[in-house]
Length: 140
Image (cartoon, rainbow, N blue to C red; front, side):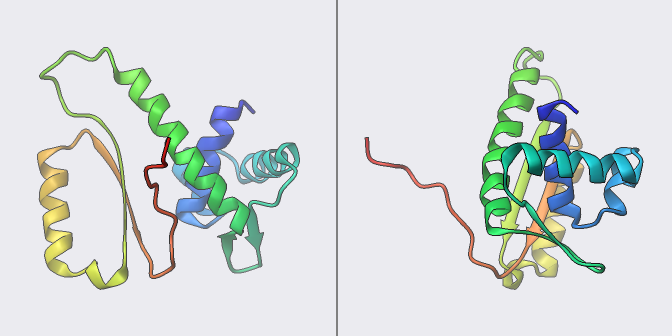
């Protein structure tokens, strides 16, 4: 499987945390998903996911890889759409990670209004109380 496709698959698995839901979402067979993730882990030489019979979660290295992959996939999507006509439909991907305390009804209503206003935006919402890495400007 091509590296870019593997990265998209990895990102989707990190989002859905299920080897059952990903094949449905991406219209693939489950063995293909498992094989692609195993090959990606083997090519990188690291374990990206911790798997149990009930749960799939990212390892620390998997979380670090996800941050980089999200940036790369965002850049690829931006490059693909850079020649779209100005004034056209707003398209792209938006990932929002918020603490669970902010995931209240008023925020969700605002998010729904945003989605209605910009249907071309693909949105991923993460709600968690775990500490996360924040991209900060680095001194030159």
